[in-house]
Length: 600
Image (cartoon, rainbow, N blue to C red; front, top):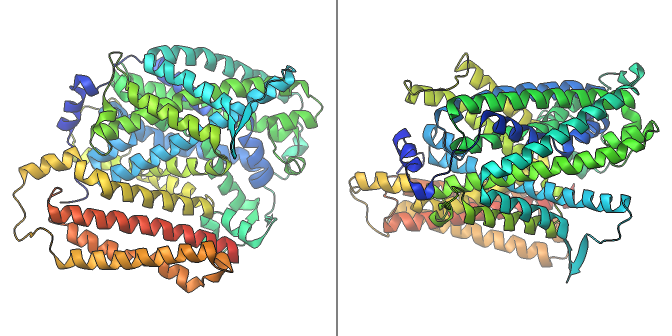
């Protein structure tokens, strides 16, 4: 059966009619707008602009923010049309399932899990760091970490995640009210900082507006891996500033706008979603864009980008310190703490809603999609909170933060391309909002998001490929055979003629080829672990052979899978082979990354 089986609008509506697996509609346009502002205006508003100016674009980071806001605006229009047309939980995952098919929907759902899981963990960890800073400011001698064997456990992230998990279990509306109060305070602090900083702005600090490109400091390996994919493919030397720096900064600061795809996950909980969702999404985006551009103008005007580049971790607080206004740093710390608090809440909500939708469709265990008497996915919300708290408390999340942007942008790309498809498939469907100039504008939106993705670092792309391969391993290992849409369509189709359980030349070929690539990958891991030269022992040709080795077996597996029912004996065998093939490919790419870092 096709990998691109689609859900129908009728099936989506049937999901909403299931009282055990549907959510309560409690949210107004105001709640949705506040939620968008709450998740987008976090610690990033006090740091990401300064970092991008210092390390990527100089004062031209203002243009980078405007570019990112425009691209986000185009993408958000597509979300607004989908969310007001198919007002169910799941955001881009559900939209893709209806328009592009199951495999694409799985990939997008897997990307959204990456985005929200990493973002919630990273931001919870940073929340704990700022709690420690507040304790130090108040002269409170209370350690925020304690040893647990070889690990160091941070308790503040566990506390904040547990608090919002309880609130979300009790009800989305209650959490939204708490979130609204904190967001108003956060916006007030941001406006105060903008006004205070404006008194220190000097026109000379905006010159040169676009600094000339200069070589990236550091080793060749670090330069190549941190270089944007676009610059790498175009053959440019690793540099910062200049045009490439401006484009890379636009991709970096896009992190500031990630919240609006998460807001779309609440579509199933919105009152009158055809009206409230578009208004809430656009209202929140407009306010966030104005705040970010204003803060960026202030920070680049207060201190020259050269002075900021000399700082280890440039931020808005750094700019105030360099002009002698240290007192503002305390206010910024309070603003960051409140800002991170609201972001964590929305991310926990969004993560649970995406997994809820995938579980309801059978792509993840169905037991996770049961809702409580309060209309919330209580058991899933608790599970999400436990996982996020564990990662934030135990892991070093610094290297994970770069994965957030690419997961978001990949979802934006496919949602943009899905709008024209849904228009053709359901031309008469009632829409609360329609993207103008379709299909031209949605396609432009998708291309621009791809362009921003191309300006992310090479190492981010490599990690993303590994994540996708792990996702495909899980899909063929579990989701394919448990998909409700696939099983329902299988039941309506006659058994494929000539299909013999346990036989088939393509099945045998796939099993042999994948088995050989698995043995080779295991051998490479042994060499990495015990070889005298470690990763450098392997030649470049061997590494490429390892990476490309699973491909023939995967192709043969897909040929074997076509034309079979999802639950036949032969199909189950091929699914296992494909899961093994994609898992082997993920291991091979990791080996390739380790090898590249060792020899460059």
